[in-house]
Length: 235
Image 1: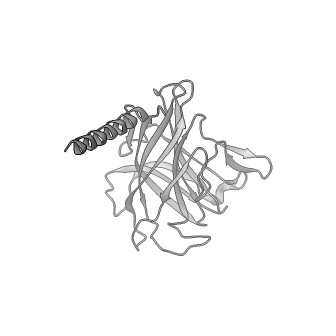
Image 2 (image 1 turned 180 degrees about the horizontal axis):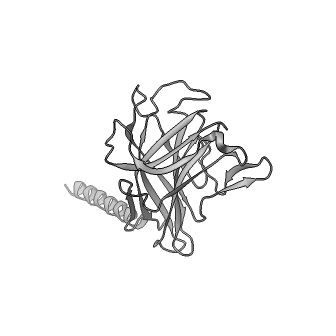
Image 3 (image 1 turned 90 degrees about the vertical axis):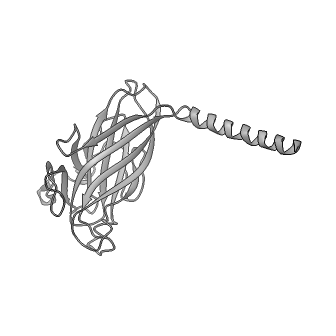
């Protein structure tokens, strides 16, 4: 009986140590939870990885408008669309977040909600319309912007973004846009993932969510909401 009591005390001690380690790793979270039904909630968008001249063939557009049928058309979303003639079109939205701790390291848990009409398990030019369009999320202390690369006169990002299925220093791949059906109808889907980084000296970061495409045709998505939970890391 004495040995059993000692064993149970040992297990209790391990549990307490484990809880203390968990509590010391993360403090109270800061949450961004934006629904785009009524507005873009200070998010804005742009494109990269396409030529700086003659970009009209890419049919690039960003707007805030009603969701398409068969979805509830009384609700709105951020519509982003482009024709991937470069075989590498990057389409993204971004938002600045203030009020974090200066130079603090955070783990962010993303939930990205959007509507996609890219059926699963399809064949397309250059790649599948669903599985070859990768979704990524992350953040940066500098504002994500496109700049002209003088070596090829293409618009490139000023951050180390994702590169199709490959993670970058400022973004992680969290899935693709395949809608889980055999139909090219818009379906509401969700992708989740985590990213770890550090806030700047003012306690600010720029959130970025986007897609990098290997499908050489038109992709049109409607973002309906984005949630980002910042957890302060102490280890």
